[in-house]
Image (tube, rainbow, N blue to C red; front, top):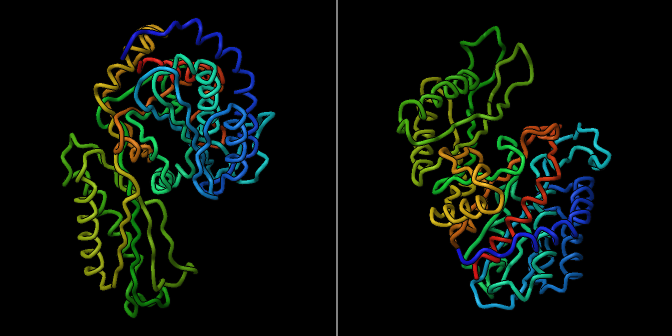
Amino acid sequence: MAAFFPAEAVNDLVKKHLPQVIEIRRRIHSEPELGFREVKTTALVKKHLAELGLEVMDLGDTTGAAAILRGGKPGPVTGLRADLDALPIQEQTGLPFQSKNAGVMHACGHDGHTAMLLGAAMVLRELADEVPGTVKFVFQPAEELLQGAKALIDRGVLADPKPDFFYAFHVWPSLPLGHFGIKPGPAMAGAARFQATFSGQGGHGANPHLTVDPILAAANWVTLLQSIVGRKVDPVDPAVVSVGTIQGGTSYNSIASSVSLEGTVRAVTPGTAGRIARWLEETLQGAAAAAGTACDFNYQELCPPVLNDPKEAAQILDLVGRLFGPERAHALNQPSMIAEDFAYFLQEAKGCLVFLGTGEAEQATALHTDTFNFNEEALSQGIRLMVHLVLAKG
């Protein structure tokens, strides 16, 4: 990265805009929306982008937004992404700005991500003459569905101009507040979803010999598939197979005619998930044959692994060290098995997904829980690093 832009100037601007950023975060938090339904959130984002005088892109009449800032100095096109959607969780935080929408909650910090990116846009707009190249601010829908990134790319969000670099931030409770973590190379797992159905012959629970029991087949398969990672995948190649739902039967004393299961596969190494899919189907066929049932299998790849560019990761860690102190820069050794469809943007441009620490505070609780919240001081830290990532491209 290029010369270090004076941190004091950025800090002053972040402090100036932070109250508004916090207000935006709390408003989004109180009105959460699920993936591809982020209508109010999208309108709020577009309103602020337009007020900043940025070039708001036309992405069609759907959720998600993007805007362009053309800097006053030569340089590359840098993309910054935030996600908009919430989760189907009933919030139990008791916050003054708790969700007003029953059964929907920002339990993964996307409200903070969106507010931070708007804050970075505010600061960079004031520093436009010092900005190298062009900045593209991307606000993505449906990350939790692992479908929003690809949908935006298909709608042309990367076009005219296409980013040379792309960055995203994610609040991370396992890191101390104000610390940053980056895993060079494979950083987060790719994800897939599988569905299986065993079909048999139902009947009275007292007469199992007159039935073909799909529950027996399903139970056997759930046991068998746990051997896939333990016995077929290289022990140093991280992978996960989990069954999330089992649906079958309507009465305690009856044998069901069918049982359906759904689950997920997570893998870090390209190619591993495909092999797991094959082994899943093979064990499924074996369990069905052993019980005499029919079976059906469907496997859907949702997103590839997040692959952070090693050179970019090293440069960001160096920048964090200069801005915040080397003790706050963490080069992570292990990938997370959580998936993130920011992976699709990293297939198009060099960049990194950066973890922003929110731990060591009363407000830090686990992601995807009904009590999740974070210390809003993390917002200012994230904005500062976002802005310097752009400015360092000069």
